[in-house]
Image (cartoon, rainbow, N blue to C red; front, side):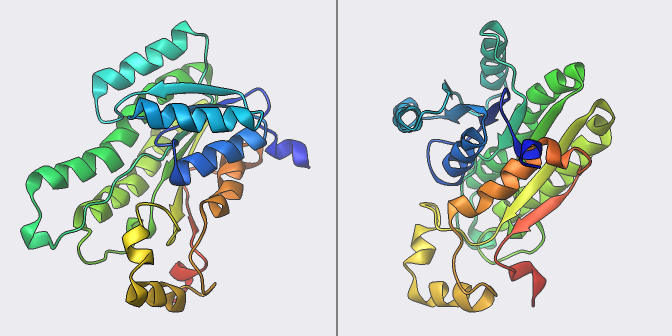
Length: 254
């Protein structure tokens, strides 16, 4: 049974993987046997993360590029091709958050959130998808959110982007599933990350999260690893177009 979750011989590209959720997912895939491509826009942060992963015995490649830049994405994949690196698994994780009331939201910030959280998944997914379709094999995991289904105040562009992730996942499935490519999404609940640090340090919000979540706690980045390994492995070969919430039960109650 464990062979169903074995990623040996596979290579996984995880965007935004120098820290946080992306880093935990990348190292989880490596622990399951995959070689990993860590990716971040900051080369120094990326180098530090790669060094830590190599110290743990993982096979690690590095690729610093801007996931919102079409030419940069295409160049990164061309380099993978030149190096003989086949991206068997893609995790579209890169994302940012900017909070502001909608009536005051600057359009430049709105576009930045959409481009980083949604357009990037299209750009990187398109390059990976072209190659996976040609090989007739591949796994794509898009990172959604609770806001893929529900909105909250002050995060309108983030919610719009993550809602888009849900339908982008279904659209990729509609076009690529026949080529033995499985595309699914993970919807994290409230997770302890640097991006959420202001919320965690807010006693009122922290209390609300713990009361609202049936598990009565924040999630940890490692809580996503099992689902990511499942969706990246042969165990999910007939799972396609799904959004799986890893949220301590928050979406199960109202």
